[in-house]
Length: 165
Image 1 (cartoon, rainbow, N blue to C red):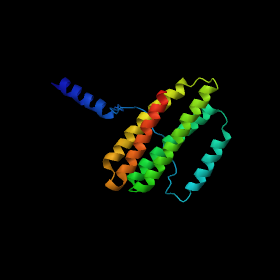
Image 2 (image 1 turned 90 degrees about the vertical axis):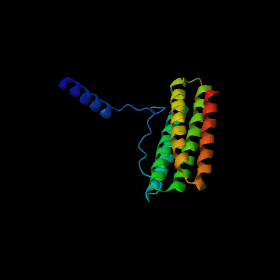
Image 3 (image 1 turned 90 degrees about the horizontal axis):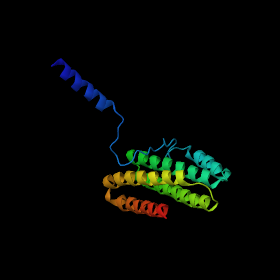
Image 4 (image 1 turned 45 degrees about the vertical axis):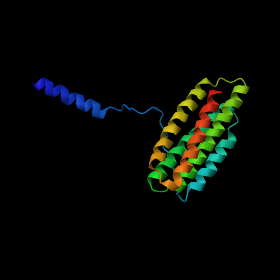
């Protein structure tokens, strides 16, 4: 009897401490860092734009743009959770602008004969994650902003189609 209880206890500890996720994707969003509601955020914007201008390789620029898209999406989620839904929406819109740039750069890299398969997979996984996160926000957004979040979701669906072609 003690063995059974020990087994059950051990199983519970394993299950509770497991990092297993049952979500559709296991794509992780990076920590967003400084949020747009910070008075110092303009410094981050200047830094990010400067770095982007300094990257010439289209494949590396696609990676950078994907990173920025992911950071801004996560920043939008943080802002939404802080009760700043309008700022969240504009931040997520900017995230998807970066995603759009990443897709363009991957196409440019492909035209230059670069191997884009790995980056293509990463973008495909990222688009799934962006869809998942926006779906969550749409479900809890108030009526005034729900339509705007839905527009961003449709935009992401368009990215998915562009990645397939």
